[in-house]
Length: 84
Image 1: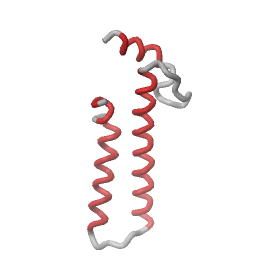
Image 2: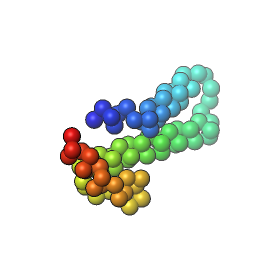
Image 3: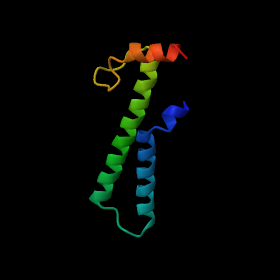
Image 4: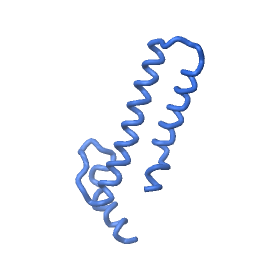
């Protein structure tokens, strides 16, 4: 599980969220740019979590969605996992 939690996608999503939270501490008003920043962060976090889920499913030999970057790699990842 450690390899999933410390992936670059999740780390960048968390640091982006921290940056947005720091921006809220200032006395600046909430604008449409801030709302777009939060929406972008939510999409980035959802994609990072989806990539982790797809990688985990593929490494266990289960089916993943056809639009996943891990589609078609189930057999290879399962073989690698079983060889350990």
